[in-house]
Length: 204
Image 1 (cartoon, helix red, strand yellow):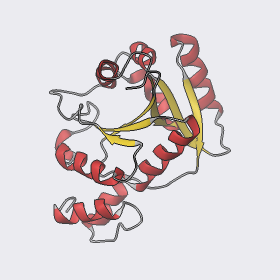
Image 2 (cartoon, helix red, strand yellow):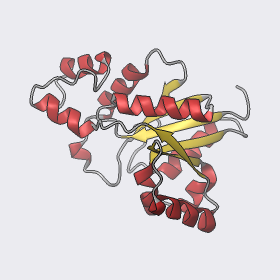
Image 3 (tube, rainbow, N blue to C red):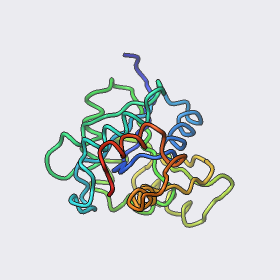
């Protein structure tokens, strides 16, 4: 495997993964010239009721289905295999063991998540293990967003890049609600994920 790889990370429950996730990941990959983007479904997120989240195997299968055909995308199951709560810091440590020394990771987040980074487990360690690519609407700069980035740079030497992308108003919640009401989710998820949801009678 080549050294000095640039790897993007998309983490989330992906319940289900939708076209917004895929579009953002592809835009960040192109803008930052990433070698690969890893999609990592969350195992047991500490901030969510696990009983309200779809079985991880289904979420992983939908991710695999959604990214099929994109050679730069890869589904990773390390969080759903882990017992107990899954924390980003543990995932990053594991990825550093898997990939060669010299690999740089870029954790892809929405700009609104920047304000929550200090609530993550061991933020100071997280900032040593990954850079962040904060996605924001093209042409939109929020002073609060910039202030928070500056604070984390000063306090933790954090490396947070801002990446511009069009605003895509799709949410997994919207998709689950539409499926539950027998409404179409075509053009919100790809056809493979749509078919998987129907075949496995999810979100009803």
